[in-house]
Image (cartoon, rainbow, N blue to C red; front, side, top):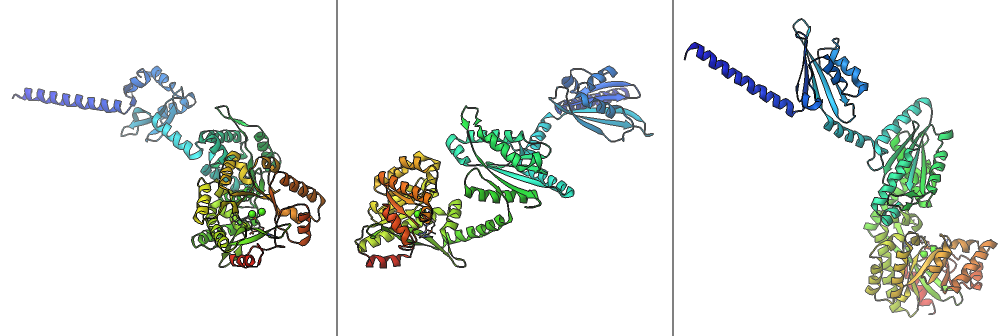
Length: 574
Ligand code: C2E
Ligand code: CA
Ligand code: CA
C-alpha cells in the first residue's frame, strides 16, 4: 500500500468514526429531549441543536431568534433568563432557572454554561434547555400531599401542626394567645352508614371547603382526621374570638349541605377549645387537649361546646388507667352479678330481680358500673361483659326456677352497643335455650338512646324478641328524648320510671304532676310500671297509691350477691 493510499484510508476511517459518534450524539441528545443554543464569541454566531427545532419550531441563528426564544417563556421570568445568558459577571459555574412556558403548561430548566479560555475570557456560551414538566408535576403532587389533605383540600394535620407551632412561637414572643378550636361532626357514622361512604366523603369535602372560607392570615383550618376538623386562631379576641367562629359555623349548619346527587345532609357538631398558653405550649399538645375535651363533650351528647381544663386531663388519665384495668378484668373474669329484688307494690310479693354487674378491682375495690360501663361501651369490652351478665343471670335464674316455685322475672340491662350487634337476638335466644328457661320470665332493659340511631331496625329486633316471648322494659324513662312520641310506637311491656322522679316526688309539685300522668298513660297503654330508686316509706306509699305496679329500691332491697337472694326466696312466700 502506498503512503498516499494509506493516508486516504486512514482519513476515511476517521471520518466515518466521527460521523458515527456524531450520529450517536445526536440520537442521545434528541432522546433525552435536550435542546441547545450555542454561541461563539469568536465567530459571533448562534447555532441551535438537539431537539431544539422539534420543541420550539424554529432554529436560533441570530439575535432576533434569540429574542423569540426568550419570549417563549413565562414573561415574568424573561429578564432573569436574559441575565443568565448575557451577564458575564457570573461565576464560571453553570447558572440555571426553572420556568414555565408562556402558556403555563410545560416546565423547562434552562442551564447556561460559559466556556472560558486560559485568560479567563469567555469564548463560548451554551444554553441547555430540558423539559422537566413530568418531574415538576410529580413534585407538585408531592408538594401538595405534604401540605394538603387530599380529601378536603385544606391543610393536612402535619402541616397544620407546623403552622400552628409557628403561631405559638410568635405568640410566645409577643405575649399573645393561640386558640385551637376542634370540631367533631356529631353522629357522622350515621351519615356514612345511612347514605354511604361516597356521600360521607362529599360531605366532608364540602364542610372542608366551607371552613376554608373562614381562613385568613390569622386563621388556619385543617382536616385533622376522619370527621374531625381544626381551626387555629392567632390572638383570639374581638372578631377573632372562638365564640365568633363557633356562632358562624353553627349558623352555617342550620342550612343543609347539598350533595352533587341532590340529597341534603344536615349535621350538628361539637366544639372544644384549648388555648396556648393556658392548656399547652405546643400544637401537638393543644390537639391532644382538644381530643380530651371532645371525649368529655361526647359523653354530654350532641351540639356541645367544651373548654379544656386541667381537671379534664386528670379525669382522662384516670380513665386511661381504668381502661387498662378494665381490659385486664375482662381477660381475668373479674366481674360478678348482683341481683336487686323488685316487689309488687300492692302485695309486696317478689315480682322479679334486676341483674346488675359488679366489678371488684384488687386495688380500688368496687368500681361503679356508671363509671366503667361508658368506658366499656367505648372500647368494646361491653360485649364480653354483657355476654357474661346474660349467661350468668340466665343460668342463675334457671337454678332458682328449679329450686323455687316463685314466678318471677329476671331483668337484664342491655347496652346499645350490644343491642346493635347483628348476632344479638340469636345470642339471647341461644342462651335461653341453653339453660332451658321460659322466655316469658326474661326481661331485657333497654334505654331510649338506642332508638335514636335507627328506630326501624331497633323495633324490628324488639319484635323478634317479643315474638319469642321475651319481655322488653324501657329503662330510665323520663330522662330521654322525645319520650312520648316514641313511646306510642314502641312495642314494650314495662316502663321503668327513672329514679330522679322518685327522688323529688315528695318535695316537688310539678314532678308529682308529671309522674301522675306518666303512670296513668303507662296504665292506659297496658305497660307494667316500675319505680326505681325508692328509698323510703313515703315514696313507696305515694307510688302505690298512684297505681305504680312495681317498686324497686333500697327501701325494699339492695342489689346483693346470688346467695343472699337464695335466702330471700327461701323465706319469701311465693
Ligand atoms: P340502672 O339500670 O338504672 O340500675 C339501677 C341502679 O340504681 C343500680 O345502680 C342500682 O344499684 C341503683 N339503685 C337501685 N335502687 C336504688 C336506691 O334506692 N337508691 C339509690 N341511690 N340507687 C339505687 P348500679 O348497679 O350502680 O348500676 C348503675 C347503672 O349501670 C345501671 O343503671 C345500668 O345503667 C348500668 N348497669 C348495671 N349493670 C349493668 C349490666 O349488666 N349491663 C349494662 N349494660 N349496664 C349495667
Ligand atoms: Ca336497669
Ligand atoms: Ca334505670
